[in-house]
Image (cartoon, rainbow, N blue to C red):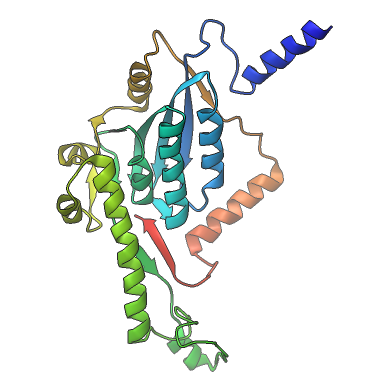
Length: 280
């Protein structure tokens, strides 16, 4: 009975990594999908830690289809990609799909190699900060906002008025510092001079083929090409076993929540002040 118990534990452990294939132990590639606007880092970081700690995973492919998103989550995912490569000695390849721009490109720079389709839209290296103002409308319909604040700049980005010169100067400094961090990451990750990166980092987007010519990506190819590329770099012989994070089947409440989130993103009704974004 003891032997059976430990045998079940052994097989269960490998099954939790996407299934056990005899003859493929140590020949697995984990795929992490990064889709849509990047608003949080925890789900992707959790997967990176899981596959990074797995002895049977020899390489990780980031399958990216994203216009970027919030600054901090993009940076946190990038940092974890570097950690998995350095501390766990894992091969990490970024495979760009339709779009891998701004914050998504930031994350890609942490990978050992970047592969894009010829028609991928990438680049958009830069930072944007935007918010709405409705002061004239509020004045027209007779709505006023009363405030008690601890400092002159505490309500920066308030929608009841335009920016003051001092506020614009402060926000510009925040944007440019965040922009400098982006340039540093591209320069280091791609092995490019900062001056060259700065010339490209004006928000311009590029096709995958253009990006390859500029040194922003390493090579062109499909997702399947990226899998084969990762297998080759990891020294995997034969066809690798592909594993992904298992997702529970969504229920009706999940579908309703997902729909509401898409509506909120499309209409941007969740106003929480100025947001600094790595977003195309």
